[in-house]
Length: 235
Image 1 (spheres, one colour):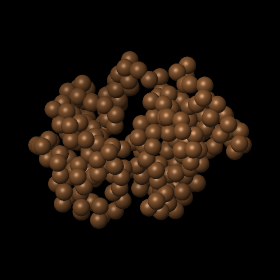
Image 2 (cartoon, one colour):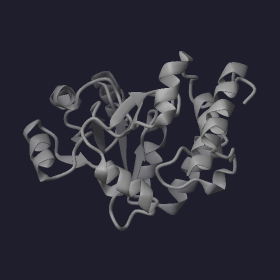
Image 3 (tube, helix red, strand yellow):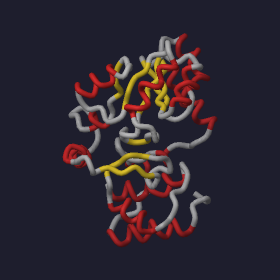
Image 4 (spheres, helix red, strand yellow):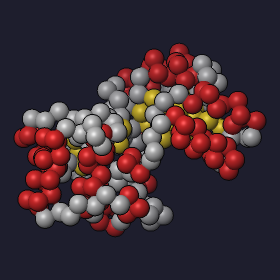
């Protein structure tokens, strides 16, 4: 928190004040679909403790979204856990494939949440170089047509995320689901203004205010620490 510049803090406080949004830094209030980066004690020690807990629970599948999970593949396999990794570039796909994972999940720029710069139509066919490790396609896939397209590109299956947020089984708030269902093709924006990493999300007043401010986004986790009290308060 000490790394957050005064001008960024002042911007947030002005944004909250002008819209009547309360400041809320109690991360226990976080719900699915909201930033919870600030709830974690980031660092290698804590991350390895998380991995250890996952291995003990023995889920059917472990998926790494940020980083290379190669260090825990052998132990996971010994416990009957499959390991996959989400990537957005061919070079990253090659790197994680060398670690012995069970499949590479390639998500193009249309993906919700954190996404890369490469379009899925371009990315998926090119990661054939990771063979024989299978490839799963993700990003902008919401129905059977997307699945058929992914299979035609050489993927063995698809990775669907945002579509399931709107399902009855998801615990996200009803207002959040409604926004997703009502959103049109121009409703999203890719920016670093939410977490510090490029993220696709529904455009909001926060995005508009950032564009007008001229302030640069901070790196993760500083940007997430900055935005979480705003997101929690707004919710």
